[in-house]
Amino acid sequence: MKIETDGFAFQFTGALDAFRFDEKDRAKPHFHGLSHAMKAVDLVVEMPTDYLFIEVKDFHAADDYDFKSAVAGHQRDERLAHFNHLREVLKHKFRDTWLYRWAQGKADKPVRYLCLLSVLSKELRQQLPVGLAGPHWEKALARSCVVLNLERWNVNFPQWPVVPMAV
Image 1: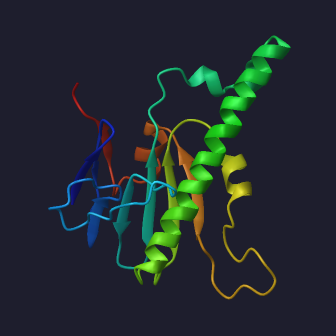
Image 2: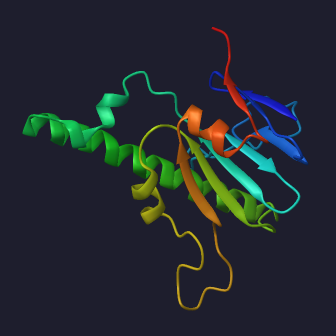
Image 3: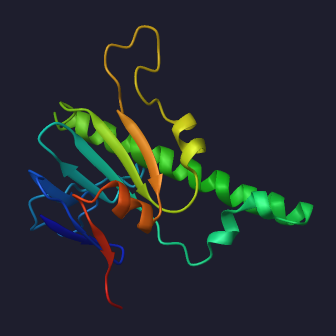
């Protein structure tokens, strides 16, 4: 199953369904009419045993988020603010998409959150409840949260290759 979003073409071998979650065309079967108050991931892919929530961010200035290599204090603070904002956006996109799917009766499989970008792996996993996050939880909201760049995506998920689309 092939799907395109944000300048990338994904191929999901073995998928039961794959669609842009924020579909704006009312005539398409996966139009959701998303609320402006809630966020959504770019793609939802249904596999036989789980769902993939996929967010794609193609950074033209990735250094804007690299606060660890900043040389001046004000530069570090500015980059850290960008980084923290991105982490919060990604966190809310996962949570809101999960809530949408739950309300649709489509939270019946484990979820893997995959982000195609180059920053934030550890920090985002700490912000999301991955696995059984509480002592009384019987179900996990997400099985995993993985942040990858394009090269690592294709190495780790050869069954779901992605390529940049020609401009």
